[in-house]
Length: 312
Image (cartoon, rainbow, N blue to C red; front, top):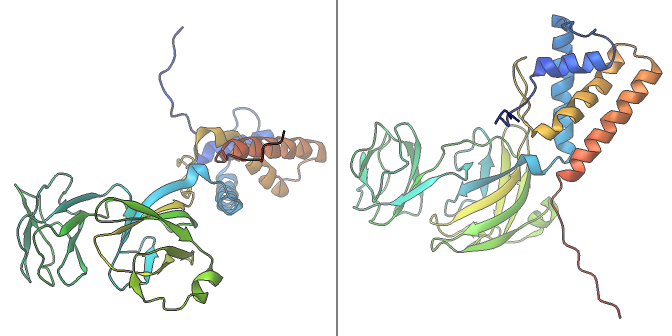
C-alpha cells in the first residue's frame, strides 16, 4: 500500500466558501462561486473565526512569549508596536569586553544566532536595556550596532537577540513565570483588573509576583506587580494568540486540520441567511455544524486531573 507521506492538507478561503455554498445547495457540483459570493463569504468567514476566538478555542492558539524587563517599568505593550516582547525563540549571550558609552560595536561570547537586521538588546550598567538593530553580519565575536550605546556596559552583561518574531496582540494571558538570571523559574499569578488596581505601592521594586493583562485594541498592556528589579530577569507568558486573518482567497486556515469540517459547516450555517435556504436543509447544516464544532472543541481542551476523597 502506498501512502502520501504528507500531513499538510488544508483548505483555502475560496474552498471554504465553495464548500459552504455547495452544502447549502446554492452551487452545483463543479460550479465555481462568483466574485460577489466569494467577497461576501470572506466577510462571514473572518467574522466567524474572530468570534470563535472569543468563545475560547484554546489549545491550538496557545503560544509562549517572553517579555524583556526594564527596571522601574510597570507596563509593557504586547503587540505589533510593542518593543519589549517577542516569541520565546530568542538568543542570549554575554559581553566578553567592556562596551563604553557611545560604543558602535560590542564584543560577545558567541555570535551564534545573531544576524544582520535582527533587533538586539544590550544590558547597560544604568540598569536599562539598549535596544537597536544589528548593522551588518556579525564577525568573529564582534557585533556592529545601528544605534550607539547610551551608557557603559560591563563584561558579562546580557545581550539579547530578542525580537526575531514580533507577537500579535494576545487575547489572553493564560499563565506566567519569572525566569531569573540564574535560570531558575518561579510562578507568577495572573490576576484581574480589580485585584491589580486594589494593590498599593505598584511601583515598589522587587521580583514580579503578579501580572494583569488588558487586551485593548492594537496593543495589549501588561501590568506587573512588583516592578522589576533586574533587567537580567525575563517574564515568560503563555498567551492565547489571535487567529490569523484570511485576507486573500488563497489563504489557508490558521487552525489544525481537525477544524476543517467545523469551519466549513459553520460557515454554511452563517451564510444561509443570505440565500433563503429551506428549513430542512438549514436544520441539517446547523446540526452538523454544532456536532463537529463541539467534538473538536472538546478534544482541544487541556486534560485535567481531579482528586476526590477516598471512602471506605
